[in-house]
Length: 512
Ligand code: GAP
Image 1 (cartoon, rainbow, N blue to C red):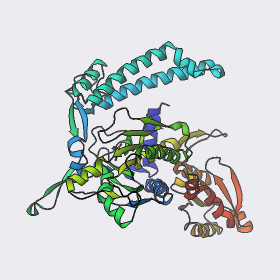
Image 2 (image 1 turned 90 degrees about the vertical axis):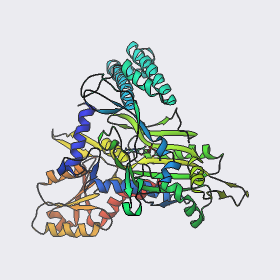
Image 3 (image 1 turned 180 degrees about the horizontal axis):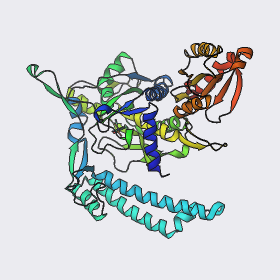
């Protein structure tokens, strides 16, 4: 099965089991807008809790806020979004479809990367244990040819990007023979810039309506509240402000399911520090954030840093943490050293003083800022795509299992009476009533036990607890582990401790 096919199956699975639905589906949906269903919202909340607690509880100098989505329009002038939050767009005249010119080129580059990886995989298969990957990459003519082509296109693309050269974007697309996936033609328009912010009217016309924007990032809420938090919280630089909230972007090419949405959620933390110390903090936050990811146990090899060659005008360092999604390594989180760009501009435009007085040195300065910014939805996709597995069992049957890191799983335990009679439901209900205060549990009594196990595997429930006739005598239940499918008899009195050991979020946090 190709990664593409697997991804389609994952999207269907998300709908079938109540993780994600297309928004307003009964009206045929709304492009790149999705709703989280009964399972999805639990997983999403757990991801947010892991992030929030890691930021605000484990760091005494980081506090949280929840700023409004609507902000004064000047915010977006100061932040540079009104002038420069643009994507380079190109239209295909035949299909009338619109694309991001940079994405067309990046996709082309990804395809070359895929070809190289296929060659390497072939080599690995051919040479078995004797395979020397480094040597193969350095000598195989097919790999070398593709790599040279990649480097040439990449260099040209980066030059165009740095110079913001829209004509060169188009020329690259034409020279590479990139065709529209719908019409199959190269009948492209010129490339032009398109602002990604959604705008709406604020207040009735009578009151003098004002154009406001739906925030395209949560970060600006932190910057404009910085002085309030610093003063009321008596915060001493260095300190951070964290926030989780919705952001909106009129993405031109919204695709790959929840990877790029028009309404999405961000978890952002702005860390304010003394000018001159920002590189040290940038390095610390890079390390800290990578640790947070790897700690989930989804394989260190599935993450990598991608340092930015082209820096935004406000940044003096930037990197992405990329994750190995089914469609390749893609940005999951951004870490930026944003200097004093945001606070400096807000100070200038608002006329309010945003300086910090350092009581130890007697200096006043506008703090510099290091930002960590991760999309909740992308994190959700990373967890789900990594967790989804189709397995063939020893008895020849197959199962679909979501091996979601246990503390993030939507349901932690399913309580299953073997039959709906003989007093078993009553005992099962009692266990449910006891465990539900500590864990999100599900009570299920329909269908055969095998079918119920499959349903719980498909939503990633770490434990299934079966109450059978012996339970009435020995006060033990059968506990089945999602990943190993091993079953053990456990006294009811020990259930809570057993489940807690595996699913308690604090165990994850303690490893950070
Ligand atoms: N404040 C900095 C900022 O917003 P960004 O790289 O544009 O930086 C940060 O976004 C993160 O937000 C990304 O790494 C990604 O995880 C998420 N993100 C951005 N645009 C998104 C979209 N359209 N849909 C889903 N997630 C998105």
